[in-house]
Length: 277
Image (cartoon, rainbow, N blue to C red; front, top):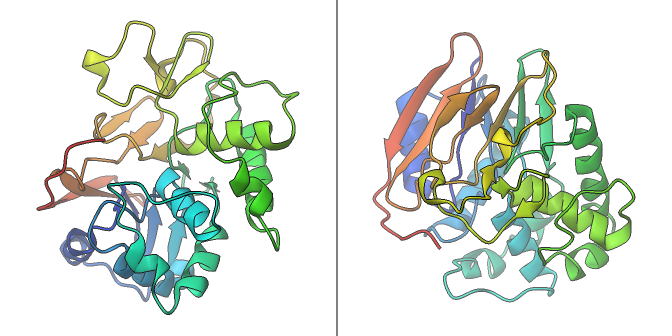
């Protein structure tokens, strides 16, 4: 009974299936953790959604920004962007079932026994692990309402950029969502810097990877935090973080890491050749 974490797929079904063949995935006993962004920009978002949903409890999925964007389009509070590849999902005969399943996925997952937590982008430098889980639950509750329109109506925007426990309403939910699904860089005071998406080597001087912000809260017994979202960062295994977005969509590779027992890394090439947007 193996447990594997897999980086951002973004509709690239062929490398996903090839990677699962490579690791010898057994759906009867093994489990897969997905870092989010199952869909969009790649050619087979519908196939990926159907496959992951078919795994039932064998799949742990946290929501990414592209997954939330798909849901916002479905609810009518966003329009498809020029490079989106969501139409096949939206027009599928099982779209309602797939997207209702998707909106009920968590934004954060924790398995203390295994020693790992899972999120799409990261957790704010000032947050404890327990606080991050509680904040994620606030967003999950809004998403799982019979009518989550209020959440999607106010989803988009880069403000507020500074966390404050006194935030309330849509501003609070937007800030939590941006941290968990969009964050890459912060400044030294923990303010989100969401515009720049490139690599660390070329980043502006005040841009600090969120996991390197000075005085970031991290307890000695915190589990390793797995995340994706950041293709220009690539694979990182250091100081309590495990970054798994290795740019499958951008002509890179799809990465899986076995989490139970000795950590093992597996990669599968992707033939897609897009430029980061």
